[in-house]
Image (cartoon, rainbow, N blue to C red; front, side, top):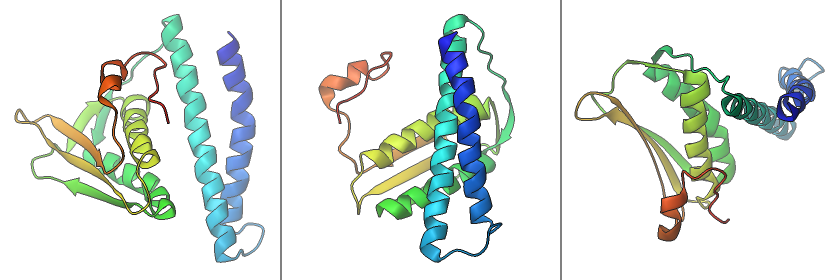
Length: 180
């Protein structure tokens, strides 16, 4: 399958870029200025993002072929929220967007979910879009709490331009994107 082969071929150069950026960031090749360290950090973040996108492409290919498996397991909610917050903090600072996490009382401490494939991808996409469409000086809030029946509730709020009313019926259509 073309997608599987292309994904495989992309992983090695992405890992090399990310690995060298990590080594530069760890000062393996000597000290860097603050600006160099910041740029190196961004390279590493973008390589990680590209790696996740290639993994998503591979998962999509598996879904279409009927070979995708969800592997749920117990995960700490604080761990999920902390990892997500750390992942997006640099982007928020870079874009001049206030990023807050609203931890409401009553949220379960653990959930059973495929954290890597489902939760991080979905949450990453929601937050990625929130940051993409929020202007400098705006705000993105990740809300974590519980529904009335005690289930985990995760909400992303932002001051971005929102989704036009005419696009709402199509946001879950395959390959649909609201125009930039």
